[in-house]
Length: 329
Image 1 (spheres, rainbow, N blue to C red):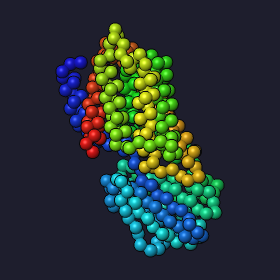
Image 2 (spheres, rainbow, N blue to C red):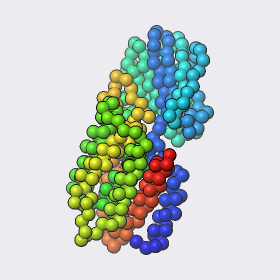
Image 3 (cartoon, one colour):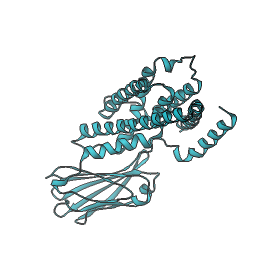
Image 4 (cartoon, rainbow, N blue to C red):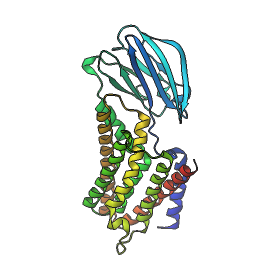
């Protein structure tokens, strides 16, 4: 790799730092309305304290609901929690709920409605659609679809997980070897995702996030140092390396899912479909990366290794920044 190419990647990495410093930034707002007794509801609204939504957003409640008592606000980690007591005349089905300020943000919001006399609903609000109607029983939103989409978005927008999978594809040769290695990564992070979400496993998030960044650095270094006549540890046992690091990435997935929240009564379904969404996103990354590398090999074969090395430098630079940031945070 030339000196000018390395300098280009360093500059690109530095330019990307402010936008990507929080690599696991799928932190949607969460609104939960639960009917405590007929007509009496409790409302919980959670939003990141660092977001525009958390600082100045406002809930747009159903028209037949009014606030009773004082609004309670408190900090919980990096989130602001707002609690309200509501009185609603009649059913909330057919009414609308939304978030003012969501259209100015870059995140989504998950809304969970739990009435006493009908099935729970899970809605998803976006900057393009900050208001949604509470469905009637015949058209209740699908929890599976909502959490599948959230899983896909998490792997595609959670850049540390994306970079890890991409580095695996850069490191390995042959579609079958990539498939086996990615499968090992999938099995491993599924174990810790399920175990952590159900309360069977626990690790502090800060060291986990730091080691996740370190795992990306490790793979980037392996890509840069790989030689056809020198089979390194990652080349001899790639599925073992992917499995071990996958266990740690599962804790990262579980942390993001905890921030999103899980609907009571549908935890297994939400957990399964979120994990399914992660796998769909992961397959998209692998397929696109393999297609690009194959095209480059066919069109400009002599560019392939320099391109891999350049990408590995870029990934490694950004991951090093994440590692330092997470160690000192």
